[in-house]
Length: 297
Image 1 (cartoon, rainbow, N blue to C red):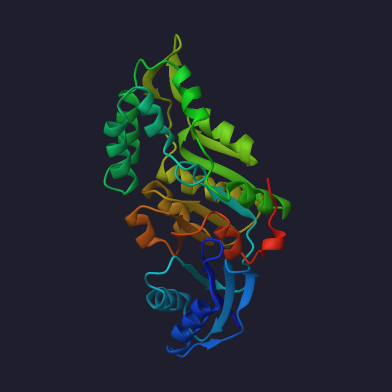
Image 2: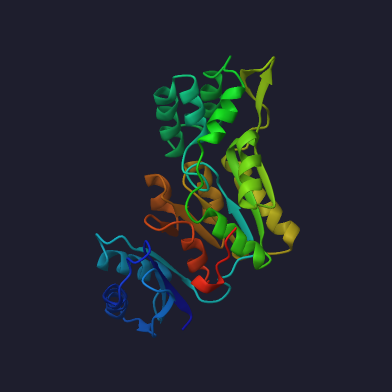
């Protein structure tokens, strides 16, 4: 079979009946289907298929499983395991938007979070929205950065994703529109090889309200994906990119496996693959890793 449909659910949430429903949906469109292969019991399984385009298989399975907490990713069977991971940070590798949480230290979280939401859904220019939000933090003591970091939590599956891909020889990069104070700490904690982000400017122990140029935004994320792939001597088809916001969309669409993770509506609608229910381990299952192969960072 030249294609595979991967189904992933929160642990214990995937049943044989669900697999059969997906298989029947593909068969109804004329696809030939193989025997389901469980990657993780009651959590993830592959369904091989042929004679149907991945986009059609994805749409058919989603329609058949509507209302169930099951993620669906259809793709070619060859080259599933990727050699470069590019990951967004906020609301992807960590559970929060660190800039919004930093704003909470200044008592203006709601004001800044409203701008963040619009920017991440593509309603505002990212660079302009970033400068506006940072400007609202002018005068905030830099100790607020540490307090924010102490309250930041990793997304479930983040350590396993990076540890497993590293163990398989993949290069792992954190590429964020956020700030180096946080990306450096997240990269060290999770095990990324490197991190790329923006720099908050400070003076006399307080934020100046400015961010250093050039700003790492949507175009820069895509450029970083292409540059790192070239450095590794691989094509974009051998890469995986994951993120949730509009500034992630170009790199998600360019990567061989581009995943919208619990993403904003505009991103979820435009991405070829998405994870709405499972954790970051879903990116491993999408690459064909079995539960026994998953490393713990």
